Image (cartoon, rainbow, N blue to C red; front, side):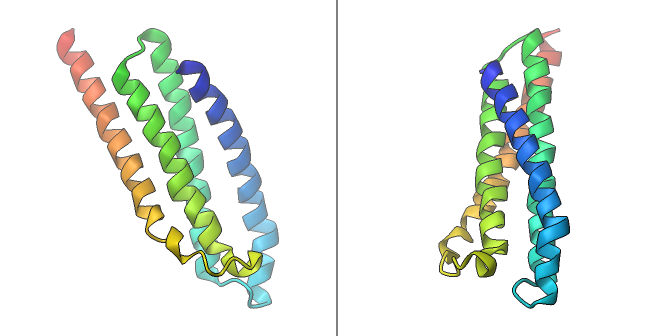
Length: 137
């Protein structure tokens, strides 16, 4: 588990940084040409932000698992990974669909909230793990 989380966090962080640069430099230029809107750019930036936050959170999970690996930490990590794919991934596609020519991927719209629910559930399980650990001491 621990190895999976740190490897995913490193790769995901690198991708988030690359996508952040892509959004800041390349995609913003597409607003002027009318291919993308400022809302598309804002959504893309939100996806990048949530991806980097949760990639860093996976590093925290890795560090905590060094002390004591629990099934709750494992669930938290896997929910964060699912959230990155579902939330950030769907927003990347939806916000650039006019640029990529994939304008008929509307079915991804309902996937985004599922990714958000994964993030929320992961944070609640993380909290429960903390409470459980502190009550045991």
